[in-house]
Length: 357
Length: 254
Image (spheres, each protein chain N blue to C red):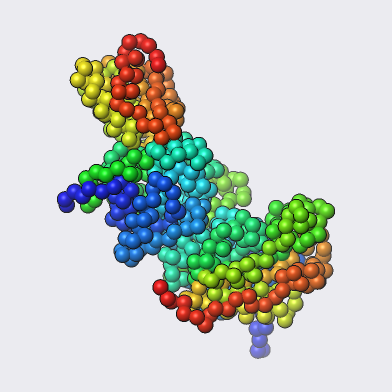
């Protein structure tokens, strides 16, 4: 189908409908408001459910209820709102319920600001709520990639019976790009939701319970070990990343995701014109972290330069994966400040001169 | 020999032994809820939401599909369920700490939206599960582990009356406060529950039955005297009766 020019937030909303989303529960917060606004109209039009909840807390608990009933459910929010949803996300993960959560990230901490940021990395990848659990989290860099992931994420959530988060920064939510909304995506197959508490106990022959309470510690440990097995499977299956400009003997490799990766692409092009080759590892999923991307890097590489719109959160994952092999460096801006290409170019030149900024 | 059944367990409850303290009236309220669901033929298609507090394990007791909610969030969870399963009976079972304190926003807004759900609200004026702390519903002067000299108005405000509060909300359809301290009131309470589930079946909107309940262990009074204490102290402050009945109006307007 022909491409349409769409705003990121609206494209994600439409992609959710195309991905089979049955119900949306959300609460207004900038910079994601176009998602509920779009869905408030188009969900009803498509015979689906839209509810504007009284709070993010209520919204995620409505998601929990609808997901427990077997529906494909979406919520969206932005950083402080995602913080409020953490209790519910922990319950969803603990009860093994599928859902999709879109996080259009803004600056923090606290009320922070409303400009683009990547400072929710730790909140997203380290749990955020209580307990030993993990999300499957994608961090795409353009609207087409975002749309494809949103469409596919409902089947992934169903397959793993786990919340899937799509984390984009405010830039991607607010910008417009041409997008093919009907581009086919590969859906992950999973069986019927015979675990759902959907009110068909008689037909099923037994009743279902959606519960995250396990008062016996041995039961709770066993439950956690079962969850860990699932996370191990995710780590094996969901290594999503792109390797860029690795063939021209780069000495430095960027590690960047989302809008930051777009800026880094421009820096790679600028530096190439000056005869400086830089490669990039672009994580497309940030949880699980794409550790396989760091295997078999070119022999020419001596430095991994992590770039973030935060003060170095993904950097910790790079440190773990690097395990002392390469020199690590970092450049980041935060609070809604988006680095320009020239800042990154300057940083690379400083590294090559042997100096640190 | 001919036998005549004079009493049998309801199909609305499972065979699990209840976990409530001796003398607590949760057992009676469970029984009534289970009976009403079974007698109305709703138990096979119902979805219940358990809350946090003494009734946290209610998902083991009601003989239907159940989902366990975070503290106070049961009305939001029930909203999510009902919106995607609108032809199924959806109910929450919540205590006063859960509903009137941490979950105040969720209950008010579920009523405000006119969610077509039924709330079974058990008010014993104290946090039972956590060991007897002051609740929003604790009476002035009532001693608890966090109001050891009795609840003081200046520090903790006056007890919150939820049925009265929700009656001010246009979206609420049926609200009644009942008690289970004697057989006569138990029969009346059952009728109230029947009405509340009828409201839902007829898609007339939000219904809540508030039960005046007891907590012998944390009140420090034996079960019999607890019933008397509830009659003498709770009911005067929380009068029984129908607080709202808007079942005659048009509930299907857009």
